[in-house]
Length: 230
Image 1 (spheres, rainbow, N blue to C red):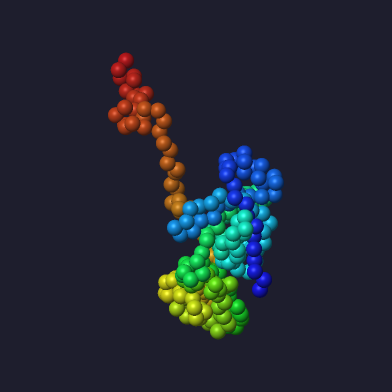
Image 2 (cartoon, rainbow, N blue to C red):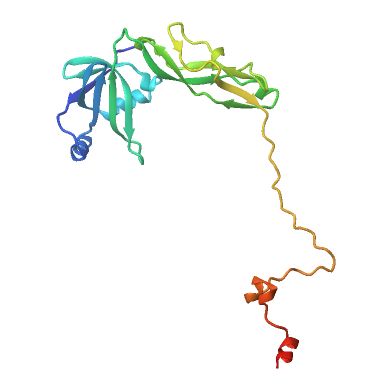
């Protein structure tokens, strides 16, 4: 595989206005840093970074950052995208030492159709899609492939069941479930609330209006009582 090199230029300015002008010129701002090293503000081509991010290894791609004649082995540590069109706005790079172990995240890829799906009518549930591993920069796996062909209904694969490259140490908890086959969920009919039965001859309750609601002692006197007072 050909050595991957990305050209970078040191920058001394910052701020929204400067960054906007930089993007108009076909560059984006970035920062490169590493252990016990001072962070350096740089600018790079967004096309070069986008090509790396779209590659098979993505953010785990190890490449050379050519900073004004001096090369540094780096990984893309972080990046920012424009929310509407998805254009790259900013990128951070982490300088690595080839003899120092790194903690990285690697994607999981499932292969095959489980027997629990093909024969038993189940549904494959993909739970853990990324794994945390430790290895040297040159040993970072492109992905971890998991064969689920033999997975039966009600069975599962855990992290402890996976095979990883010899020079890679798994950091994700071994009991975490990667994938399992479950029975398809039956659609439940909507529950319709039933009205309470009304007894024969019963009249609907009528709430008294006005002051009568407060109690019988405050109710309006009957017509007979009015005549007696006269």
